[in-house]
Image 1 (cartoon, rainbow, N blue to C red):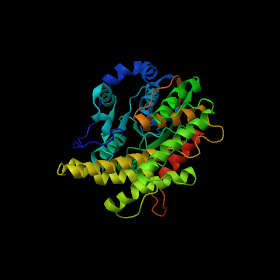
Image 2: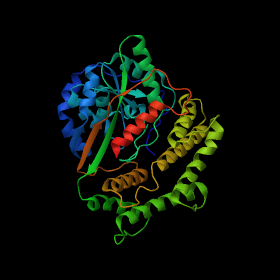
Image 3: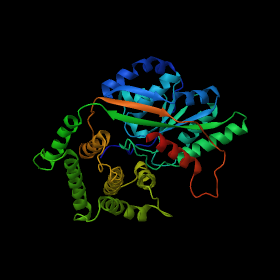
Image 4: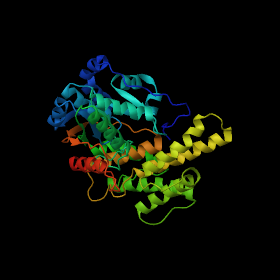
Length: 391
């Protein structure tokens, strides 16, 4: 399990406003992306949409999909093109990891958000950024890295809350609009797919005590590995493998992990999105760890519950049909990366990649939500525009 939760009390990391480090680093960004993430080239589309909003002095929120951990840096190529740094909201655990990358993330405009609770300081900071229109604000409304390059997951409600709150304040102050630009990030693998993923699949097969099934078609081999890993988790948590279609098995295991925790920790209606369910549970469980008053046996029990949340979220990132119907090289690569990450807690970098960053037209933000609608119309519009750009 990756360390995405900490027992340490949360301390807000504020945004760094000076442009000194951004000016110093931005020229080296293409080299960094190539050296550490295997991204050989980037292509920018729709930049004129963002330029118009900047020229109009609007409060600008950039809402991007999040298929890879390097997305904030890749979107940094957009900031280089418009010659304006961005502020970006990032999970606190990324700052907690320390090291020069955390330091650099802060100096380039990143500020923290505590995902395991309602972080009013981070929300108010994001609103202030949009009201002042000092820089665009970059948010990844999916809430976590999906590793699904052409699929968008449900968006978290905080994005719309921040945008509408800022729009209301700007209107009251006579400062003009807040707009949202959907930003679609798509990656393309340019190398030899089989040479890239076969060693990874073979290593996982070895961990399963199998001989490498080199005679099988690659997608069938990957699917077999995935089924085996799912079966192992079913044996661990359910005592036996489940039957039925893959989506039924995934949902069955997710519910087995989360429903008992929701009964213990939560009240009210259940969420449909696994990510939201996990977010709510973490928000209930983590404060009891941070308080530092638990006995050791209770602390271990809380960590076990958080491990169940983590596993449920990881399971939810596997679309059951992702490898069907002649999948693209990117889908195959992403699936193998996800499998390796779940087995070893890290995924190696496969190169070369190219990235396309496409900016959609501005979505004006209304100051009020339509209370007659059961869904958030702003979130629905952002999602529809992003999905359109990802096709």
